[in-house]
Image (cartoon, rainbow, N blue to C red; front, side, top):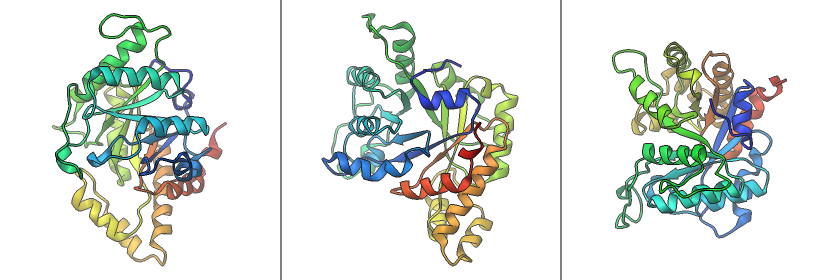
Length: 306
């Protein structure tokens, strides 16, 4: 697997450590401090922090600006890039500019439809899909040229990621989809939430058997549950996500459901770290950066690195 030396995340994975990434959303504020206030708690804990790009088709501070502020604070970003809002020229320019500013990890996404947001009348671009964006970024890095053939000197240093959904091995196993993403240039995957340890074991075993973990790294999505109510909401509203009844019952029986949600997440992290083929975990919690930081610290996983 090609590594990008400036990326700490790439190096952690290449060294065989269990990588931990987290996620933040840019603020509704024209303020550097607003970004710092959100993500400072993750410094020294998360190997990298994803910056969402207009999630749910709602505008915030640009992901590019947010990621740049994080680099200046010594926090490594994973810049999410959606193809909904920009054509290929704007995307290619952002890739080169981001690398020049010290942003080297990218997650390529298509993006939510405008109808999901609070300005549904806004125009959608979608000139490229996430696969085509990935291929263009890969070629810009590896060939040192724009798609037009013009030289980029020096070329951008990129560590390329894609999203995935943990799947049960069987008739619907997405081998062709996974291989297509890897062939496009994907070097790491971050998945949707999975709160089922046995399912992660089966998923990763199938990834190993299929040779996918020899070609890319897989980070399984997880997060601290705030309450039993929020767990039920996820079951009802997030496609492919199932919080087991045992976890919901454990939350309901806890005196402090938020603390119990962190403890459950830390236990699952520890379990993930013991699974062959699971290269790491991706922690997500809307406006829950501090909770994710607590989970990473409480899991004790960073202390196991030699």
